[in-house]
Length: 386
Image (tube, rainbow, N blue to C red; front, side, top):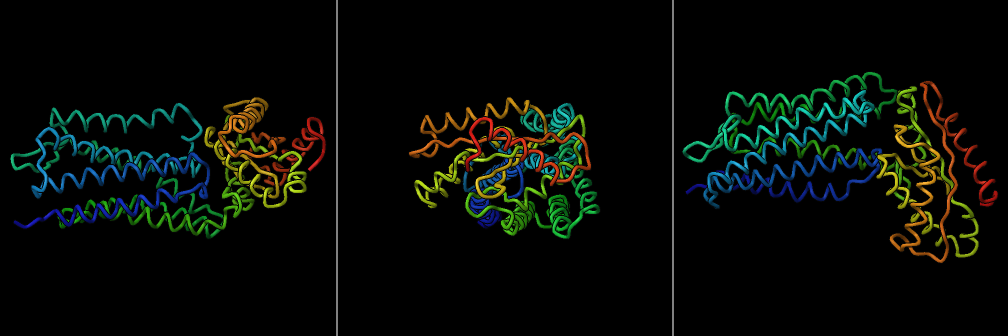
């Protein structure tokens, strides 16, 4: 008997392997920890779709035998993973493009409603057959109501695509325009797949198209590694300037942006006492703590230069003075508990900040104000020693 879907399953199996390596190598080089987290979730959703697809294909070829109920569950998971993937893509671009919904908690929660409705209907259909059913031959069939599911997917793709086009038109550099146009592929790929799969039902076109887009994005990210600090892996000064300029241009009284400048206290003494190699290890250790702390607050972390670091928060959810105290406690607890790097010295840092609550302020002005507060705090609390 011809195994019509075995090749289908093999292709998707290799997609899982390749996309898994991409997820493992995905770093914070593209922006905030929040953005990277959304991309990873999108990839995990894609992997979930592939696993469900493979089980469906093996069942279709009678390589494995699934009870009717399990067959329905697998198909519900399959189409739900597609919704999740579209939703997390929406979240990534929402933050990346600083869409209005990224600044409003009300809109944030409301934008989850279509996803919740679609996924609820997917699993309810296991019992009701509203969106899909399994026919007498064991084949998946969609119903006339499946347009609800499709509409939700294209909503999460179309909204950020419109924002991407707007951003590309107003981009100030060729690199930015190229990046924004690349994001549009995630909308185009499903459209092409949906059209062609009717003509080539035995080919996993949707899986291959999504893989192509993720691969292109990964190559773009690798190309952007020039924006990473070679020692610590954090965003570098160039990427900081780009990011800060973008978020500050949209800042206002209701949606302020906060830049924190951070300087390691007495760093020169570490170099003088333990050597520059140990100094590099101290910078790496501190950078790992900053990255972890920034991830907790969905913030953008960067190395400014030397022993100076920055953190940008695209909101004012926590009072800056309180956040500074929280950071000091976090660094101290991580070192004293041995949960991070263990050194014969204690890393401490001073911080300053600048709240941006109006558009039009230059990055030099913002950094300058935060830097002045940093060194005032450094003098007061620790003395002016590098």
